[in-house]
Length: 394
Image (cartoon, rainbow, N blue to C red; front, side, top):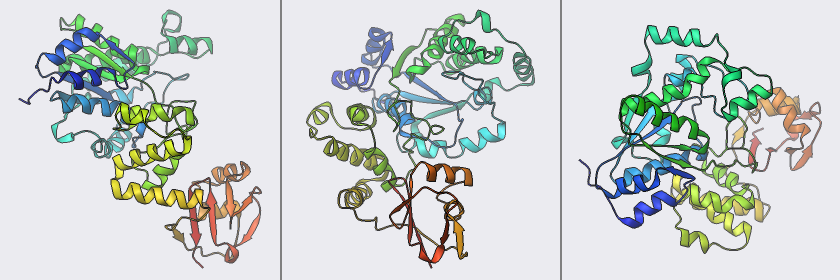
């Protein structure tokens, strides 16, 4: 049994730093001070293969429990990912196949290990207790029904107002998530504020099965680089945990000024005193934030190198020193074709969008015509957006 740290300052920091809401706070504080090892549950559906620093906010909170000696439990929604959490969705989420879930799981723990101690983590897959022929038949049948007129959940109301149906299967999702808490005997469940409804359902399901109800701790949602929407890969406003150091550093430097303090509190190990003492100038404040975040995921040397590279590129107007090179075996190509050939865009449609939005430069000259034909021999480098470069090797 791990030794439980009941240091009042550490407990209070866990209960206040980067916390949106706690149900029941006094009960949870008493449990943390009791010396008993608590079982702390975090459920994640592997709907995508990569994690970003928005995911890291709740993983960092899980690590705080782990650091105090409590048992962290990661529920991998290998079953519920095939249903799709309706939280925040205006339309029904596409159901993933078992093969897609398996692919997404492959790198999940490797990325999570950048934040939490996976060797001490209790990892459970909810397909272990849900996947049976009988359950699968119920799930298939549930998809056929709609209960739009009897649901009062906020995000369901929005869908009803927009004329979109709610399937019985989606309505059942919180029950499945709640049953996870029964199966792992959770004392606490943590999640983002968008998960409050689902977390409360865990308490209800535990009560139904005559168990003590879990306490709930929610963390704020992290706005993405657009400063408006929640960080999301589908919206392209994310900072990935696997981003290269220079790219990670550059992305952090594009965070909206008004969000820097929130990023410091949710995404770094800086103390409240260190955050309060940050430079007043927004650029200097962001430089510290970028170094701290890059350091967490890539180490001190990489963070310092990324910082020097950013300063050279954007403060002094120099090109990065580590631009990748590609060789193109054509003499002429349209700008659209060239972006695809150099892998600066994944498709011609995306290349056209980037060009038309003014985000493409060739030899430091902005280009806005996707159909322009270029002599490849005359192209030295291409820039897409503020941070993405490639050299043409002739």
